[in-house]
Image (cartoon, rainbow, N blue to C red; front, side):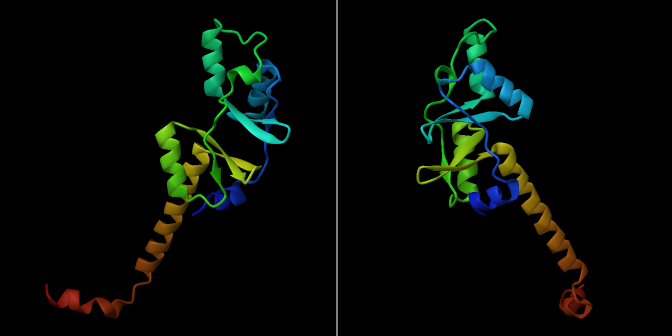
Length: 154
Protein backbone atom coordinates (compact mmCIF):
# COMPACT_ATOMS: atom_id res chain seq x y z
CA UNK A 1 0.00 0.00 0.00
CA UNK A 2 1.21 3.49 -0.85
CA UNK A 3 0.70 6.96 0.62
CA UNK A 4 -1.56 7.81 -2.33
CA UNK A 5 -3.99 5.13 -1.09
CA UNK A 6 -4.15 6.72 2.36
CA UNK A 7 -4.78 10.19 0.93
CA UNK A 8 -7.47 8.83 -1.39
CA UNK A 9 -9.43 7.55 1.63
CA UNK A 10 -8.57 10.43 3.95
CA UNK A 11 -9.28 13.25 1.55
CA UNK A 12 -7.12 16.25 0.83
CA UNK A 13 -8.23 19.01 3.17
CA UNK A 14 -5.14 21.02 4.07
CA UNK A 15 -4.62 23.60 6.77
CA UNK A 16 -1.66 25.90 6.37
CA UNK A 17 -0.01 28.82 8.11
CA UNK A 18 2.38 31.52 7.02
CA UNK A 19 5.77 31.70 8.73
CA UNK A 20 5.11 35.35 9.60
CA UNK A 21 1.75 34.56 11.21
CA UNK A 22 1.34 34.88 14.95
CA UNK A 23 1.80 31.58 16.78
CA UNK A 24 -1.27 32.48 18.87
CA UNK A 25 -3.44 32.66 15.73
CA UNK A 26 -1.98 29.42 14.34
CA UNK A 27 -2.62 27.66 17.66
CA UNK A 28 -6.22 28.91 17.68
CA UNK A 29 -6.71 27.48 14.17
CA UNK A 30 -5.29 24.13 15.30
CA UNK A 31 -7.56 24.04 18.35
CA UNK A 32 -10.61 25.26 16.44
CA UNK A 33 -10.21 22.67 13.67
CA UNK A 34 -9.16 19.95 16.14
CA UNK A 35 -5.97 19.24 14.19
CA UNK A 36 -2.49 18.54 15.45
CA UNK A 37 -0.48 20.28 12.75
CA UNK A 38 -0.29 23.07 10.22
CA UNK A 39 1.85 22.99 7.12
CA UNK A 40 3.85 26.21 6.90
CA UNK A 41 3.90 27.59 3.37
CA UNK A 42 5.66 30.62 1.93
CA UNK A 43 5.37 31.71 -1.71
CA UNK A 44 3.71 28.39 -2.53
CA UNK A 45 6.52 26.29 -1.08
CA UNK A 46 6.74 24.12 2.03
CA UNK A 47 9.02 25.84 4.54
CA UNK A 48 8.07 24.07 7.75
CA UNK A 49 5.66 22.15 9.91
CA UNK A 50 3.98 23.35 13.07
CA UNK A 51 2.67 20.73 15.46
CA UNK A 52 1.52 20.84 19.04
CA UNK A 53 4.99 19.56 19.94
CA UNK A 54 6.55 22.85 18.76
CA UNK A 55 3.78 24.87 20.40
CA UNK A 56 4.36 23.14 23.75
CA UNK A 57 8.13 23.63 23.47
CA UNK A 58 7.53 27.34 22.86
CA UNK A 59 5.15 27.58 25.82
CA UNK A 60 7.73 25.98 28.11
CA UNK A 61 10.49 28.22 26.76
CA UNK A 62 8.43 31.39 27.36
CA UNK A 63 6.94 30.60 30.76
CA UNK A 64 3.53 29.44 29.58
CA UNK A 65 2.71 32.05 26.94
CA UNK A 66 3.39 32.37 23.23
CA UNK A 67 3.35 36.17 23.41
CA UNK A 68 4.26 37.69 20.06
CA UNK A 69 6.13 34.63 18.81
CA UNK A 70 5.83 34.02 15.08
CA UNK A 71 5.22 30.63 13.50
CA UNK A 72 8.66 30.94 11.89
CA UNK A 73 10.31 30.92 15.31
CA UNK A 74 8.47 27.83 16.57
CA UNK A 75 8.11 25.64 13.46
CA UNK A 76 10.21 22.68 12.42
CA UNK A 77 11.98 24.14 9.39
CA UNK A 78 13.08 20.79 7.96
CA UNK A 79 10.14 18.43 8.33
CA UNK A 80 10.28 14.83 7.24
CA UNK A 81 8.37 14.37 3.97
CA UNK A 82 7.26 11.52 1.74
CA UNK A 83 5.79 11.15 -1.74
CA UNK A 84 2.58 9.66 -3.08
CA UNK A 85 4.59 6.59 -4.09
CA UNK A 86 6.20 5.95 -0.69
CA UNK A 87 5.21 2.52 0.64
CA UNK A 88 3.27 2.39 3.89
CA UNK A 89 5.93 0.26 5.60
CA UNK A 90 8.57 2.87 4.78
CA UNK A 91 6.37 5.66 6.16
CA UNK A 92 5.94 3.69 9.41
CA UNK A 93 9.71 3.22 9.71
CA UNK A 94 10.34 6.92 9.01
CA UNK A 95 7.71 8.14 11.47
CA UNK A 96 8.91 5.80 14.21
CA UNK A 97 12.59 6.51 13.56
CA UNK A 98 12.17 10.29 13.68
CA UNK A 99 9.30 10.44 16.20
CA UNK A 100 7.24 12.25 13.56
CA UNK A 101 3.50 12.36 14.10
CA UNK A 102 2.74 14.26 10.89
CA UNK A 103 4.31 14.07 7.48
CA UNK A 104 3.71 16.32 4.47
CA UNK A 105 3.21 14.43 1.22
CA UNK A 106 5.01 16.04 -1.70
CA UNK A 107 4.88 15.54 -5.46
CA UNK A 108 8.00 17.30 -6.69
CA UNK A 109 7.57 20.71 -5.00
CA UNK A 110 3.78 20.51 -4.70
CA UNK A 111 2.13 19.75 -1.39
CA UNK A 112 -0.40 16.95 -1.90
CA UNK A 113 -1.54 16.43 1.69
CA UNK A 114 -0.46 15.50 5.18
CA UNK A 115 -0.62 12.07 6.75
CA UNK A 116 -0.56 11.49 10.46
CA UNK A 117 0.57 8.58 12.56
CA UNK A 118 -3.14 8.03 13.26
CA UNK A 119 -3.83 7.77 9.50
CA UNK A 120 -1.08 5.19 9.14
CA UNK A 121 -2.23 3.18 12.17
CA UNK A 122 -5.86 3.27 11.01
CA UNK A 123 -4.86 2.05 7.55
CA UNK A 124 -2.89 -0.85 9.03
CA UNK A 125 -5.76 -1.85 11.35
CA UNK A 126 -8.35 -1.56 8.56
CA UNK A 127 -6.17 -3.67 6.28
CA UNK A 128 -5.69 -6.33 8.96
CA UNK A 129 -9.43 -6.38 9.73
CA UNK A 130 -10.20 -6.89 6.03
CA UNK A 131 -7.63 -9.69 5.80
CA UNK A 132 -9.04 -11.39 8.89
CA UNK A 133 -12.57 -11.13 7.51
CA UNK A 134 -11.48 -12.68 4.20
CA UNK A 135 -9.59 -15.49 5.95
CA UNK A 136 -12.57 -16.29 8.17
CA UNK A 137 -14.86 -16.37 5.13
CA UNK A 138 -12.40 -18.65 3.34
CA UNK A 139 -12.20 -21.03 6.31
CA UNK A 140 -15.99 -21.04 6.73
CA UNK A 141 -16.41 -21.95 3.04
CA UNK A 142 -13.73 -24.67 3.11
CA UNK A 143 -14.99 -27.70 1.15
CA UNK A 144 -15.68 -30.58 3.56
CA UNK A 145 -14.24 -33.40 1.45
CA UNK A 146 -10.76 -31.86 1.06
CA UNK A 147 -9.68 -32.45 4.65
CA UNK A 148 -10.00 -36.29 4.56
CA UNK A 149 -6.24 -37.01 4.55
CA UNK A 150 -5.75 -35.17 7.82
CA UNK A 151 -8.73 -36.99 9.41
CA UNK A 152 -7.62 -40.49 8.33
CA UNK A 153 -4.31 -40.27 10.21
CA UNK A 154 -5.98 -39.77 13.58
